[in-house]
Length: 158
View (tube, rainbow, N blue to C red):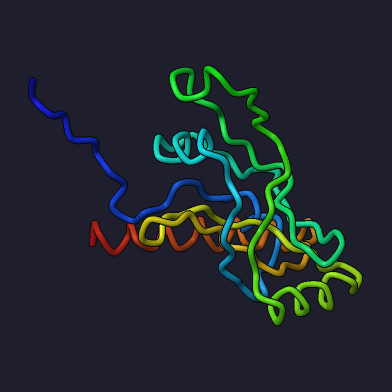
């Protein structure tokens, strides 16, 4: 029998929340650990995670990741009842947690999950304090992105 090597992700990124960068201005970022069960870790190794509509809530002075979907593997979760959309506890130190609580109490501020990634053998979640964009801000962002893409094309062909 020959061993088959799995193709690993070179950056260590498991999932990105690209929608959050479009909908929000990112103010400050934090790195948080996640409390996961075994089947979730196995699914994350296969890259089966989505952060599209995920956000962070504070409940009883603890941070919880809500709306993140981790799709269970058929082979790894035969004996467990899997909940793909369950709330997962985020591990932050007290200073970071106090900062998040203080800022999210302000109007227009919230906390969103930006990315899931590997750091060594641990899974980390990048959490950001964000401010909501208005519709005209979203159009400005789109226009700037289109112009920078066109500028790159012009420079490449010139």
